Length: 226
Image (cartoon, rainbow, N blue to C red; front, side):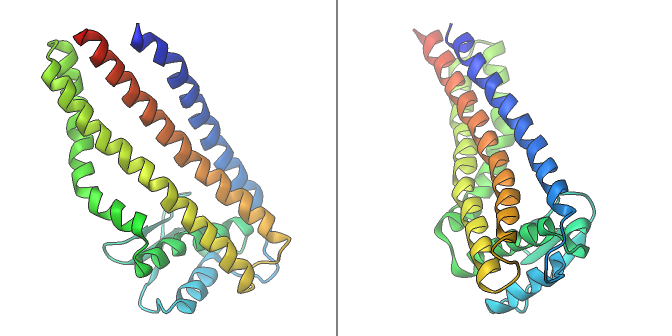
């Protein structure tokens, strides 16, 4: 009974996730057609933002794909997809500066980023073993395996929840710096906000799905034990 009750909100969350992915691609493509007034490419904006914060030794590398942009904290490298690295659109500078926001967080030891980095090895293991434990537990009706799977899955959910403030903070930093340092005009910042907000929604949707799935497993576990 408990599992059936949770199916509807989980399906709604999946629908939100699909809509968020559609929206982020649509928003990126829309503002990728709008050139920023100062003609800065994603690389130019990222380099200026890094240098302004004393991160002269952090390189910027182009990578293949679309929306494959990320900051690598292990090698301390900002990697930008080719449409972001080479283009001078609103989307390009927004995404590039967002990734630099993570590099600044790293330098300043932003607490939530530090927590996420420390959690990663554990979560990497937990994410791999949790599904196996849950499947085995349900097949063999082994409550101990189900309980252990829920514990490991909880670690993965916590990681996603910690990721939310990390992403929101990086976007907030990026938008403020882009305006204050003249990467975009105040009018263009509206487009920047739309691009970054659309991207943030994908993280919210993913976290919501995981949280609802965790609750479903807990309710199934509790219901079966009763």
